[in-house]
Every structure is written in structure tokens, then in C-alpha cells.
Length: 141
Image (cartoon, rainbow, N blue to C red; front, side, top):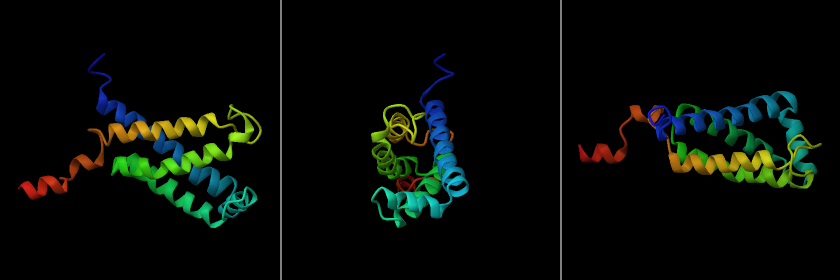
């Protein structure tokens, strides 16, 4: 079992899972279902600047793609944490379960914690970053 589930595979599974959710919530939910204009109106209705919806969309898509590829995983995991905590705050008055009307707060909190763990795990072996030497390696050569 130790060979089947190591930190590289764990990083890969977590990275792909988090990336999939970020892309689904941005590209499908915000872009297709609610539309970006509708998402911006929702942001405005809860007291946030409407332009923030477009920034959130961009960060979710960019982070989702970067995580999917395994590119600068720690950076993009950290970048998305404030957005995920913001989603937790947004849903905090709806109760615990995300199946509640308006969605609860446990799901965005879980995603926030997944991003924190991903920072600790980093890219892992199965990432595009393994094909590029780091700056540190370049200076040693």
C-alpha cells in the first residue's frame, strides 16, 4: 500500500480534485449557469464590488488550469485561498450543509483546507513543473 499511495500520488490526486472543482465552479457555474453579469449582480447584492466577480472568475480559472497542470502549485493554491474563504463567508448564514438553500459553508471551507494542504504537498512528481529546471538548478550549472 505504501507504494500505491505516496506523497507524489497524493499531491496529484489533491491537485486534480481541487483544479476540477475550481474549473467547474468558474467555467460552468459562473460563466454558463449564472453568467458573469449575473455573478457580478450577486456580488453586488451581498455588498461586494461587482468587478470583484470578474477578478474571482479569472483567479479561479487561472488557478484551476495551473493546478491541473502542476505549474507553481503552491503559489496558485495560496492565491485561491482568500477566494475560497470568501465563499465560506458568503455561505456562512445558510447553515452547515451545502445542500441548504443558498448553499452552506462546509464545502467552501473544505476546499480552503484542501488548498492549504496542497501548499504543503507542492507540485508532486506528476506535474509539468518537473520538466523544467528551477532557477536554483540553473544557477548551480
